Structure formats: C-alpha cells, structure tokens
Image (cartoon, rainbow, N blue to C red; front, side, top):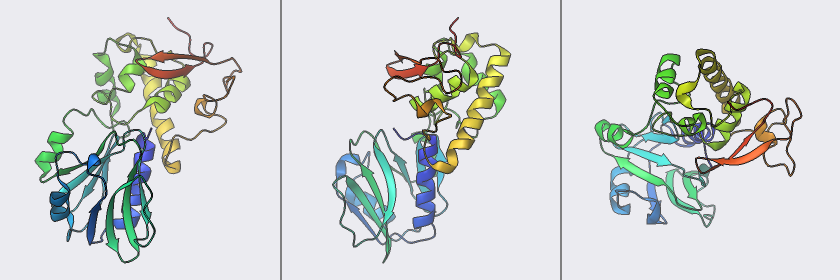
Length: 261
C-alpha cells in the first residue's frame, strides 16, 4: 500500500514529468476512479491548464494548475508514472494526461479503491482534506503530542488513523514502533513523555531515511526487511518476531524490544 514516502515519490514523478507543462489531452480510460467529477468535466477543467508545483499532504497528492486542483489518492495499488504517449497503455492505466509530444502522466491502479478528485477552488481543497490530521513529515512535536494525547486506543491504531496523523500506514507504523521500543497495543494516552519523545524522534528519522527511496525500504537493518520472512527474527536482537492483527491490520513486532505493559 502506498504510504507517505511512496506518495512523495509520486510527487517527484509529477514534478519531473509535468511541472510547467500544459495539459494537452486528458484521456479517461476508466471512470471508476473518478470521484465527484465526470470524464468530460475533468477534461474541460484541465486541458489547456499548466501544472505548477505539486504538493503532498499525508497520502494525498495535489496537482495544482493555478486554477482547479487535481487531487490523487492511491489506495492500496495506485501509482503515478511518466511514459511516452506512443507507448501502449497497460491494462490498469486508468487516466492519461498528455503534457508534451513525448511525455504522458499516467494514473495506474489495479484495485481502484481510491482515485481522482477535482477541486475548483482552494476552499474545495480544504473541504476535501478536512478530515486529515497534520502531515506526519511536517508535524511539530507539540502538535504530534496533542494528536496522540486524546487517543484512548492503541498507539498503532492512532498512528495509522489518517484523521490523527496523515501519511503513516501499516509498514511505517510497525517500523517506527519497533525503533521506538513500543508495543503496538500500548494505549496512546498512557505514553510517558520519554515515550512520546522517542516515538516522535524515530518517526522523523524513519521518514527522512525512507524518502529518498520513494518507498518503505525493506532493508536488512529494518524490521520491514524481515516481516515477510518465513520465520522472521528481529534484526536488532535476534528474537523471533511475533505476528498478530491490531485494528484489523497485520502487525509485526519484537517481544523483547517492544515489551507490553
């Protein structure tokens, strides 16, 4: 599932492929990924417009044009890529944006769980993102602590709740909690000040390390690099990792490094 580093990578794809270029043609190959906008209205709104500097908030990518804003959410299987217009579309290429004779931005998504929205004004952007919490990469320490302090459920559930903190998904939450030495089911409102400080620090470090790769990297020194092993062990202490479900999500943790309370 795309998480914050993936969407940051998609932002770079949008920037390098289309920033400063005029949308020459919009081809909607599957209207099932459009939300609140028809294919015709999407074409009328974007064709002739120029993409400006894109922005990301959590798992949302905002493609600004100086007029309407295209908002993209990638669900579990979505991605954004740059291709040539003459390249044959893949089966899951849902919407194509031709921005030059040799450049075409493609929204590709197998499962179509989210998709594309169109905001005519900045107020519409704010409305569409109203339920999102502060961005996990940009949030300050005080706002981070405030977001967690009122949560009575488990800390992993809080971290992955986009209305609490925007951008973290299953892989990042497990990685951050492992680095911080916190069990995923510890109540968020029971965290001590040192716990919160450690959690915030490790979240920042994990995100900054992952951003250049455009994904949550499965490095050998990371928990992420071992969660899918047949018999996974902790890369820090060698203890066999545990698997369970927390808030309906497959969860991996180390019983030695992350003891429960």
